Length: 73
Image 1 (tube, helix red, strand yellow):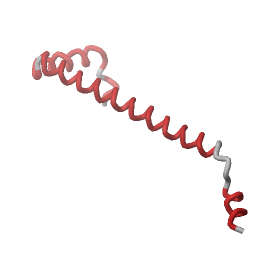
Image 2 (tube, rainbow, N blue to C red; image 1 turned 135 degrees about the vertical axis):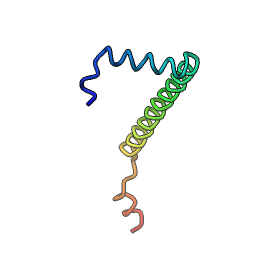
Image 3 (cartoon, one colour; image 1 turned 180 degrees about the vertical axis):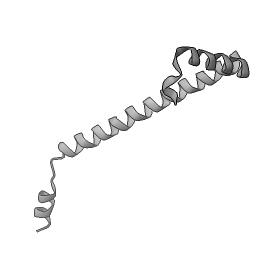
């Protein structure tokens, strides 16, 4: 269905949206979309950093489970 739109169809849709909502409303909407994308990217990078930190802590932990069990005996 959407395979046959092409450039003229997209331009027509853009003009109709511009006429319906106005330039100011579209501009503010795109600003909010940009803020959302930035926030999403920041969240993803923070999540990746937390995962890397956790894996680095686990690999550098000098006390292993077997050492803990030996201390109990």
